[in-house]
Image (tube, rainbow, N blue to C red; front, side):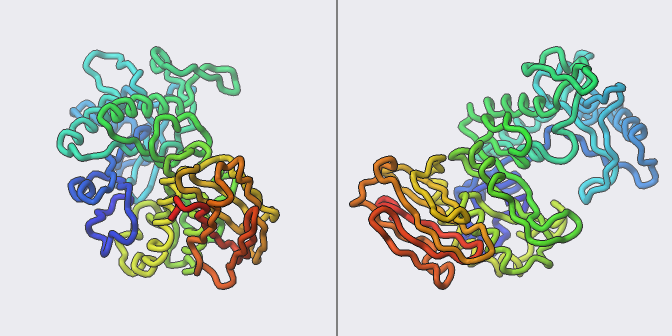
Length: 428
């Protein structure tokens, strides 16, 4: 759930909420077994500028300097932690977003940044104080949510600010001209690592949005990962249905391994075809990624504040979320010990005997497909006598019947259809 109070959603129990982006109603979330996370965006300072102010990087920098002199810790942290371009200027971009009309500064959130002057505060220190104060006020809080971990403007940015090099724990890099600098993503990794150590010492969890994309290095320090996605690109316009590729899902699942992965669909819900929502749910089920919805522009008119939308889709959540939860509880395994004789029908395996074992089957084509699924019982550790394939979505599509065989089963799948099989008695 992004931001909206789950208590305000009609019949919230039907949707299987487990992870809350935001700390606005922690007691309610804790009472209902929902993990709640304090929102931070470590790499940024979004600066709203007065309407009459000239929109230039220099004027934005002057405004931050003025506010810092007036005592704003947030702006003081920008002075010490701003990324620098190769010419020594600040990394700042003029921005006009629903949440900010002004500018956004790229910051180094690493705990290893050392202020030039005693008493100055860094971005890491400012965020640490906020985190500690929020936990003190909300002891039931689960952890910290790092927004935009690899998203938006700065994660692959190069930082030339030499005073930031002094205590870095990750090697420096070189730009194309051979100049020494930092990859800003490494600053985020240092931040995530330190926050994880602190949160884990409390028995809590860490959560990040917008990862893994280009960079894998943050994954060890994150308990939950996810991303915003469109599936009908691009933002602000609208196009044809375009799901994430198998290679993208494989990358996410491989880096997460048995940790949960979550999607937030940002799209024009008024333009999405109703049947696209189930196609979205089905493809997420094949990889055991949790599907959810947010907003067409990551801010305004959120899905979860529109009962007409979520009540329409309630049956889909009731159908697919319990199955995705069961797959996650069993745990993804990279080796299936099963084979499809149809290259258009993909397999994923979840679970290991003697626990529940599941196979997900996805027809990746826009035409009906027949496949024979062969299972290596010896390698799987599943005695053939225990083989009891049971479809968990028996009525997902007319004609989706299957035929058990001694070494597996045969199945017909409709276009872009998914089926989940429980293979052993432990999966009951």
